[in-house]
Image (cartoon, rainbow, N blue to C red; front, side, top):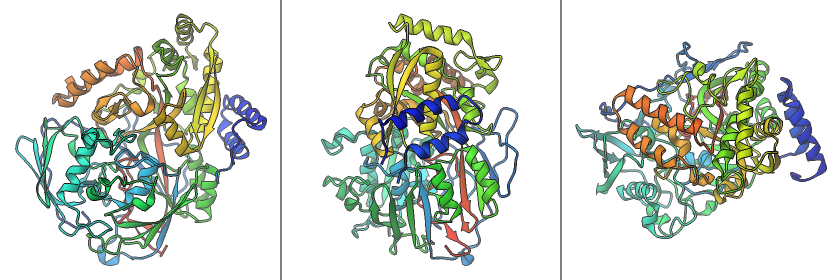
Length: 623
């Protein structure tokens, strides 16, 4: 059990703040944290997708597969460096696939109680194998932009790119025996677009952050017949399918949800599912067990008999579990092992595991609650953004593969270069140290806001990923540079997410995924329910939301890449120089280790686009 207020923890926090000022900090931090707490479609044919007007070039995603130990750090798509994605070994022909076996997977955090379509990453990872999307990111190819049918068998799009028609698989059915129909698809889309139309059904669960990325494009949808869905867009959007194919857009059983039985791990007994696996058991904070759906509509899938998801939140415990082969892979591309630990893991266990470095996978942000004093003052928020030493965080948490945390990913076709970022206030250094002009301006802003001597507050850190390490670094920096003293409050992961939703925090550390490589998706940190303003993180009072909403609408419709880039630069300037309740520290590289017996795996940088149904995985030798 975690002690949150004991003297031992306070001493360790102080030690960590001092240790994190040195390059050896990450090795010692893991040891200190361990002392501080212990936590216990398919083969269906699809139509080719016509080119949609309004689509623009997407940046090259970085994927590097490492199969042998290497001492060379790995860079993540810097300017002038465009690595070619490297796939795993090609899957064997169908007749050579070996069926059967249960794959034990690591889960980086316990599933929270939020139901679909509000669900975020920790819930999505165990709901993924149980449900289908209308379309999906193809897990059987190394092309991270390849989208194919999942519940549908084909789609067609009108010449103007506005009307999309999907034919559903006639054999798909729910675990209670009810057929999956067009009404289920329309109900799911409507629940994402406008949950209020269902009365109090979604009361308390109306967040539609990443599931709602397609909202700006959607105009209407209807069931043509039992197995035909028609969707009309307001304008031809190149990001329609990338947003629709995300793991968060799972099709729900209308007949069940309308009875008030929301679909999530808040109440697993309510789960009525369509996917390749069925729910068996959930042991809180320990494991989730799932078994093969013997009546799955995709013939021959899944190949394996089941999945055991083991909740392992500590990096040291995760490494030990992989070493002992108690787990063979993570159930997403989040595993609580940063690039530093993964490099060592590669050298120690590269004979048994393939290791993937994929990026940019996401950004870690300092999340300020604009409804709580003193973070309701934009001058305080601006001071925090100026005082962060992003380069120090990168040096402590990576092996040179993280990128500076601009509001939009650097070194993409729509973003600034890293070199440009290094000249900006809040991002620049002088002789390797935090730029004194940025510190002076941060102190001036605090004085103007009524805090000439700084202030005391609280930073809430979820016990998942690197959040504790990151938060400790941030707290140390703010104390050193501007005398903002943040007391560390540790929370179990799912409880931390509830705190975000309920507004019960002052400052937090939270990741934001690069959902798919497009400016629309890069706005995801600032979007909720189709509007800019990440409401589950309590950002209602950010002063520049209105203009950011305007810019999002304009750039999403803009077909000229240069004009679109100019609009995005305006949005980024507003977030850098005016107000940003979520300053980003850096963009990270996801590191994923997969046992060499696992076949059929292809990586994806996005935690929300990687196909988590796992119906095409198999084992050789047997699992």
